[in-house]
Image (cartoon, rainbow, N blue to C red):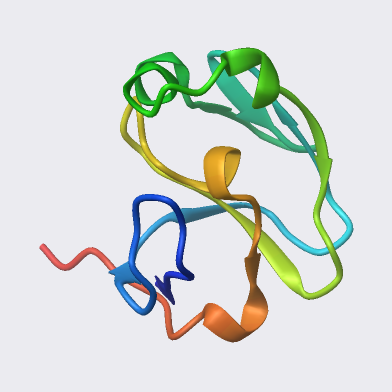
Length: 102
């Protein structure tokens, strides 16, 4: 869980829960339908969110290197607004870990 930074569609300091798909030093490959790091591939279709935000998908795909003080976060739903769109978050934004309680 982390506090958002201000983006085009998010105000700052909103609590957000995402999975971590990349840590410091990782290369994260963002594709149209998936995001992968050196050990795992995540289903992460970005077309619907890109279309809703009027962003060309070509500007989102490619390999991203995660900086030493950052995390690449990913939503679990198709069209999620996540690091594919706003980039990696700074470690200082992390406020905790979320757990599913059944």
